[in-house]
Length: 118
Image (cartoon, rainbow, N blue to C red):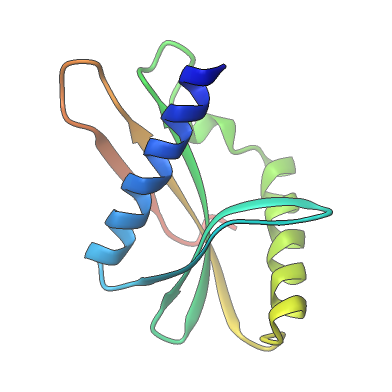
């Protein structure tokens, strides 16, 4: 479990750096409420972006994006609404993105970013 937790944290750090390199600003990390957690929240111009990050050390359990099910996307939409209500940005333009990080043992990490998955 510790390996998976550290891999997830490492993946979130890589994802945040990726977003910032694309000119976005990360405004929240691991935001939680009673409904669950959002990995990253960023601003992309006038859009608030809610980002689900999935990290894997390989493809033995499938592609990281395969873990983002319709049920998971529905929960992310509810979480995005909760964050907007709590932060007072209820009428903000929003987008839900997904970032897959594959971190092979002896190679650089591979970062894939899908915009507007929901």
